[in-house]
Image (tube, rainbow, N blue to C red; front, side, top):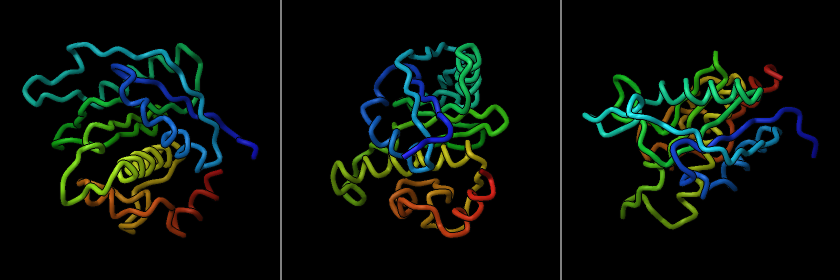
Length: 181
């Protein structure tokens, strides 16, 4: 298999999110791209932390990832972290992509939550990480949110919505992706 473009992956805050690296790499390869995995941790400071919410600000994390990426002369980039992240007007996010900067951040914090109603084993957590990684990489490649609830590119605001997605693109998103290449 020949890959056309690299997607760089950086650990953010610490290496905890990297325990799911095989799922993250698989999500990048899903789009026929090559993962370029860095072990240089992007540190965060109190500036990125919202003490009232006890979460880190995803938009400011994206700025830090973009700065490191630019100094390393890399292309499209996915930051991976195990810390809880949020955006203004949202309680939390699984991930965020800035399509202009070509940078995304994925948080595994809420994807690894275990509940009796939704958890069926390690495979469920690994599939969640794959699906949400593939979702953010899809944004990096130019895909937008999809109205089809089972498509990887559908917006998920709950773990159940993540679990209900299939680990594939719908036909419409596959066609859109062909047009973006």
